[in-house]
Length: 227
Image 1 (tube, rainbow, N blue to C red):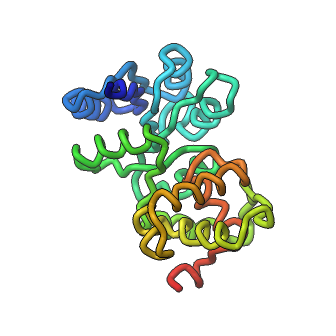
Image 2 (cartoon, rainbow, N blue to C red; image 1 turned 180 degrees about the vertical axis):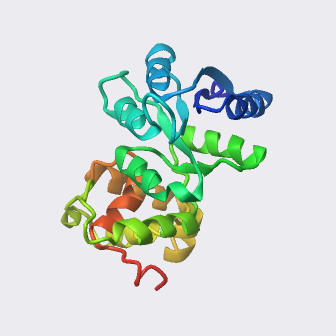
């Protein structure tokens, strides 16, 4: 028996964006259960419809997407919070990073192709994180390494085994499970087990937060990321 289609809320202050994304998703069998023109509407829509995923714009009136993401993922709004996928542009890097620390599962550029949009929704709904390596590196280099940055997700890496620490370091560069398996000479199933244990031990929601922790703890630095 196949899994039911993802149930999605689209939050963006531009009606054209909401309509366009909604048509793309619906054409691929994805159920758009609500639209929201601002952050408050997004929070209300999540509470009302309990979707699997929210496509969340950052700059919106009344309540911005970052604060809406915090409220949705705080744990008190609905029993099982949805995944949040941030819609953004390059000039909003600092907001994207803050959203990841708040629990968002990744980000999409607004000029995404229809095929990438559909694939992203299905991937994040399935429990993965959407982290393009080049954009991830740009984010952390620009913001995590700043001296004035306040750590939001710091965890004690001493709870990890040496192998788990190695996997976290590689995962922090945005590598997929297949790429991690190739790097360490492991099966993808073994890699998935390592990643699951890392998330459990560090009390992290998903791979997106694992990337944040890898940088915030100094496991990866802008100077060491290419090694």
